Image 1 (spheres, each protein chain N blue to C red):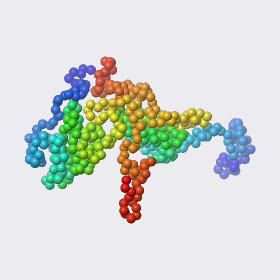
Image 2 (image 1 turned 60 degrees about the horizontal axis):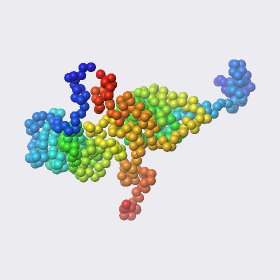
Image 3 (image 1 turned 45 degrees about the vertical axis):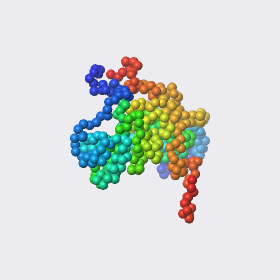
Length: 239
Length: 232
């Protein structure tokens, strides 16, 4: 099969194509080295190209962020332009988990199970303030960031983020995939089975993330007008 | 910022001590208003009717002795002149400061298009009241919710389990005023407990059979002769 470089013209022969490419200053002609029936490239590039342009999202929508996620998939914003051709409601066919909305502790094992059911390679987007950090729901029933349950690749800030924000986050996933390499594939994809059904962040990390108002064992909420314990330092008081 | 005389002083002072003896706030002047229902209730139950008041201009609230709640509610449901046959809601209120917890029954009479609110006060050291599931099936989950969030025990309830919080939740009753906002355990412990939940905690064996959970055999279909299925 030759190359057709214009309407109504005969296909170029390989020799003509080579000559044309050389005339335009391209080394090796139009098609790189060799005949036009193959081209040389890197396996990494081809694999990552295929992966990043056919990311099927697993929607895990629990709150208003899911409305924006639906808008992202609808015609105005059209996630399908970027290869998220359809929402995959089976985790076994999905590539990227979009956690959109707040996650209560009672839902935590469900999220974890859906993540475990997704096949490698898989990525995770934490969409919105609540999924990323608990948001305003710093309460007894709410997971303070889904990164204590599953590994997160991209955090999309916002309350809720606009569809452009979600699309930008997914394009960051694509960029991350573009820079992956099969040579360190197993290191990237490894998950310690001992970590399953355990908090992914340690006590120190969770405590640090819970600041600056302390964690649940030291209830020193100083925000707003309410406090459940006396502040230790006077400069901590909001005036 | 000058804080003296601020409207937020009471908030800054925090909740009152649990041994406080301040009574439950009640609207004033309710007892002066004639209401044929309350008159009838007083005539029939006398000392069980503790107080009557009107809230939000037309919502009649009747405080009933907690020991007689089922008797009074049963009468309200079946008496031909009342027929409060729809149980809209069962909930509870904790005013804090060691004051009693109020269990609230919101009733509606379909026949007469009237609403009535019945309240029972329970002291914190005796949070136990008769269940009304026998009167209204709707009370089943509503009473479980009150039990879950306030720790009120409903006597004779057929299935008194937690309904909103996880079954392995061990931090207490979250809607009580003395419950800290972020719970009693550390975030790490809360996360660990959440991830160690088991669906067997949530469902009865029958519910698991219907859902076809792994490891649970579905119920055998009844045989063709109509003699009934397998007895378990």
